[in-house]
Image (cartoon, rainbow, N blue to C red):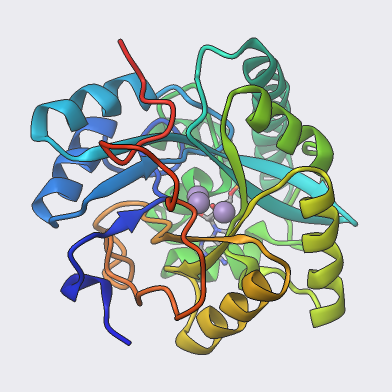
Length: 293
Ligand code: AMP
Ligand code: MN
Ligand code: MN
Ligand code: MN
């Protein structure tokens, strides 16, 4: 069992840019992927495809494979679950209509988070978080960066623990996409749906199996077996689920930028034996639905 850094092909199919809560621009991200000798990178920003055209152009310039993606926020059984779409055509209206609704909720939520944090004694959090974002899409990470900068917590992890998770002052619950809708939008856009970082959900084995069964029934195809947010045991557990349920296996770092030294582009364990990679039937140059613009 090797590590990807020793393999000839590295597919990092889960990354973020400044179009959502990453800190590198789409161009910088793709150039960094080329420097790291990745074969193919997917850009999968939260609820937006805004960065795809820029990233695709940068990938052509540096000569690496590029997959246009998106990470869709879903509410499932009172939990937030993330569904990655790979190979989506950003010109698909069905997809864009869905993502537009999610971003509208996101922006209302950001204002509401600001109001709730204000009540908890933290002034100007909305404006502060917005200043860390591109001004269009504001997520919890932008609040985290603001709160760390102004000394409300020592690091982003602590901010999430103390302010931004369920039951804490800045947490705003809400309705994201239905699982079936997210899959339908991705498929309408010609993409493949993948359950992101499956070991991160607070689910029992039975509940995860139920999610994966419903996901598969609704047309979902892939499971992120290898994730930058999984440990080694979790990767192997997810490989087993993928094999048992005939889901294609994906690999992704969930890279958000160089600030996090534990999560590097393309630096993760190789897929365990017996998994069928999600890219097994992709055509050269390692992309599905190559973006032309
Ligand atoms: P949002 O979609 O705006 O609710 O934010 C979700 C994002 O917050 C995730 O994609 C991660 O980037 C980040 N995140 C969630 N939980 C944590 C945590 N415990 N520590 C650090 N970052 C987190
Ligand atoms: Mn994120
Ligand atoms: Mn996620
Ligand atoms: Mn992600």
